Image (tube, rainbow, N blue to C red):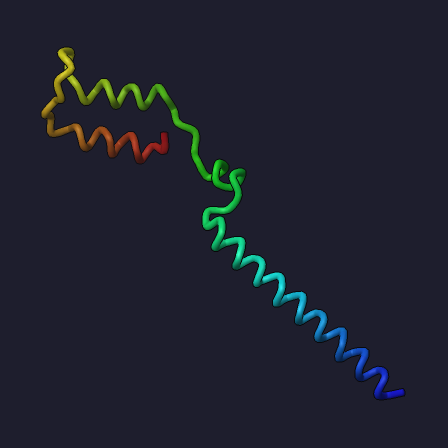
Length: 86
């Protein structure tokens, strides 16, 4: 009778161990195949773009003739916008 319980507990333990090994093996294979996750997860990581702020920055970097401005404040303006989180 004790031997039956021992083998029952041993088989449950080995099945649980096998299930854990299979789970992590499949997870590793899936990560190697899709390193960035599914499309839903990947698209969820993108942040929304505020088009008005982007247009403001683009217009502030060029003058009225379309030439690039050479102000010393250009980098500061972009850094300030970036820090706001757009």
